[in-house]
Image (cartoon, rainbow, N blue to C red; front, side):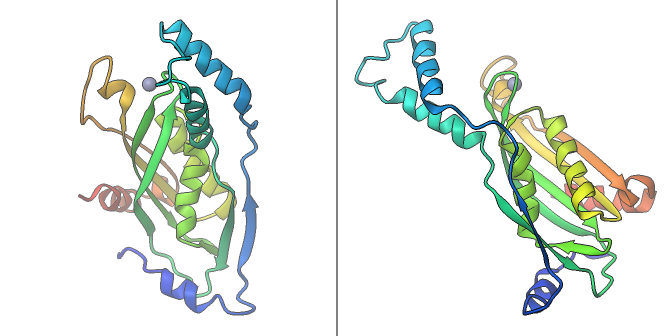
Amino acid sequence: MSIAKLEHQVAASTGGSDGSGRLRVVHGRQEVNLPAAERAVRDLLVALGRDPSSPHLADTPRRVAESFTELLTPREFDLTTFPNDEDYDELVLARNIPVQSLCEHHMLPFTGVAHVGYLPGERILGLSKLARVVELFARDLQVQERLTVQVANWLQEHLAPKGVGVVLEAEHLCMSVRGVQARGSRTITSSVHGVLREDAASRQEFFMLARDV
Ligand SMILES: [Zn+2]
């Protein structure tokens, strides 16, 4: 079984009445209140014994508030799908999708990569969209386990593939720069559905390809 090279098929089928479908994906979370966030950062600096009126820190509350806003706001995207006209029934796997998220326990970043694969059903997905789905859930206060499950569940629900699998490898700043200071330690989580969960050979193949280094 080979890793899919679906880009060409998709490109070849995008002209005119190709049966492609688009679904606008927006996050349903509450918007950040920027002025309130800035005030809170100023208060935090005071509480930490720092002087927010110092020229060095004058602009820090705005920068911090904007940084968190960016890290917590996924970009909208169109979920583009195409009919699986060729009845492609092998694994489609996107490896090393960058992941940046914020741990909900410390509000410190965790970063790494996601490997997302699926066995197509009636529809196939524009490949870049897998990264967008990861971002949709990564730009939130998260734990890695939940992020992994959410990406897998969302794809299962919206793409209805025969199977879906997600592996996440990430380094957590709350583990590497504080606490146990386990620098370089990566946490690996996974979530699988359908054939990739139930069929031992498919499951094994997915994990072998996903973790290949
Ligand atoms: Zn943490």
